[in-house]
Image (cartoon, helix red, strand yellow):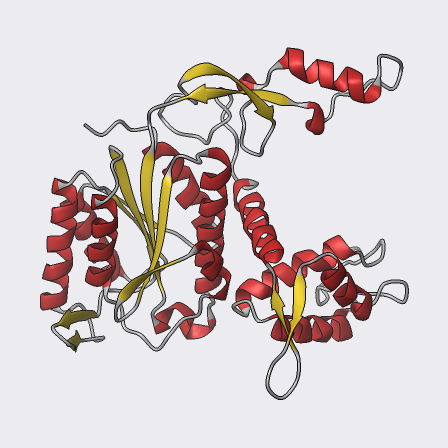
Length: 369
């Protein structure tokens, strides 16, 4: 009698191990282990022992040597022995990988090559500047004359004529619509509670947004801050190394810092994206902390709603991405969103990146008066 037979899933590494396949795994582990190269490689060795992700023709020692030769990791002098660390090339590679991973899940709109939204496609007058094609450019921007000329030079006019990505040239558009964005990441202890890693997806989102803005919207501003008991800004290069601390959730401190950063920006469009999985549980009063992790504390909630109202008066919408499903927390986020006139998403970890980047594209097309 025919039927189905279920067995344990084992990754298929047919075709042999390769540097690209192993690099993809390695970069994922670097985010999980906060940039710790040694810990990531130790885990890869364990994966290799269990699932044979390498073979006799290309083993782990070959991969580690290629990481060094290609400039992804470097050896450092440390007390008690040598160690290894990431390089700027590795950090940039992780940003690009995060952007490709998250944007690859989103469907391009038919018109402007941007993400689905109720707003028109890419605007602005065409300029005389022509540059090489980059990830995220729309089909309408491609200069067919220049692109075909490049293809003729590179492959000739015979049977071997081909138009490839490296031949493409695009015409830049001029736009006055610049946006200032603050991305807030919750690094309180609850981001790793209950056996669920929530900080790694948040780091991927931050890396993807940073790479998107650097490559597609270079005139935009992106500030990234983290908040626990306190709030502070971090640099782009710090993102892979983020770790959750033994913190409560001081949402007020994060929002106050975000608004302070946006006040300094001269752009019309300003917005805040907040990724959090828990309720606000902390306030700072002078040098002391007022904390209450049990339920929703009235004092903390009222202060948080006051800050949301202040942001609304400054035309700063706050989009909240809540990685939680508790009914009373959802009600708090609904109240918070109503006061600010912003948006709220109750996202699982898989859809988080897509929601954030899709909303970013929508918001930056609004002309706030």
